[in-house]
Amino acid sequence: MTFGWQSPSNIALVKYWGKRNPQLPSNPSISFTLDACHTKTQTTFTDGQGVRVLLDGQPAPNFVPKVQQFIERISPRHPWLQDYHLAISTHNSFPHSSGIASSASGLSALALCVVDMAMHLGQPLNAKDARQEASILARLGSGSASRSIYGGLVVWGGTPSVPGSDDHFALPYPHPVHPLFATFRDVVMLVDVGQKAVSSTAGHALMEGHPFAAQRFAQAHTHLARLQTILAEGDVGAFLDLVEGEALTLHGLMMSSSPSYLLMRPQTLAILEAIRVYRKETGLPIGFTLDAGANVHVLFPEEAEQKAMVFVKDVLAPFAKDGRFIADRIGAGPLPL
Image (cartoon, rainbow, N blue to C red; front, side, top):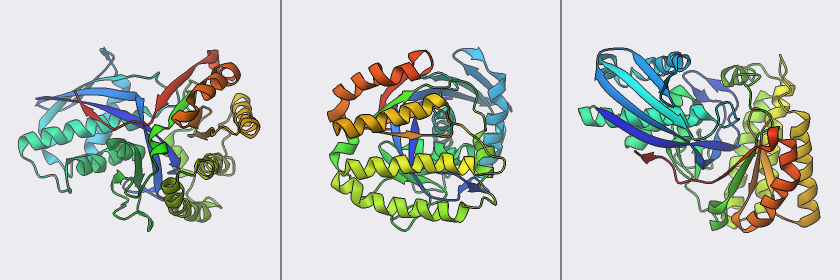
């Protein structure tokens, strides 16, 4: 049997940073699901054991250990997997090592394929529905992958301000959201397209014993609660202020960890400063966020797109490597192939 899914990446607005076993977050997070940045994965299940991975039609043995680890982690929930060989064919719509979370899109797509096969076999899911089960499985491969199971704004991690939130799976943001936020664009400025200086696993481990860990985890809960009013009222200024603070906090935590990491580049800082100057001079609702790397996600609503894209091309692009950027938007979530 073959099943296929197109699953998106996502960009965290309130950041998940720090985890405990088994792949549970130390604090809640909320993300925008992306649209253009996605992974298409087809998985063929045949009798036997083992894993084979093709990336863009070519053997990708480097990905096999990560997939095998994923299968081992989810096998207690799906022991039938031990009787099957998985042939996985995958394609990313964005460049590898471009600062877009391919683990989120790739492992969420694979989790959806596994759930499809389980349902085909009549296996119990032990979750509310197929999407929740896929989110649980995806989380065991990559924490942020749990959020890529859904479109729009997605929360992962239990927090008092979000009913139904849970450390084991993500869910669509349940509170009222102003229509403006459904139009948001995300332009990714590709400052550094090489391998990350610190892996996500190593980065999360830095929060163990971090001097500011407790304050950070409490701050994430506070920010999720504050977003409820901001998102309902369409307060873009307050939204960008909170999201930018989250991004800078993430990098501040890494700079103050042991060992410490400087993941921004001079071009990163130049882009951040240019955005803030432009916003102050024009009043345009444009801001930024960052993942654990040098690339910058430029955020703005559709109503600002015409002017914002001129600014991106004329002012920001020269700071990117070879002037490269990826224009994306908030997306609707995974699609079956």
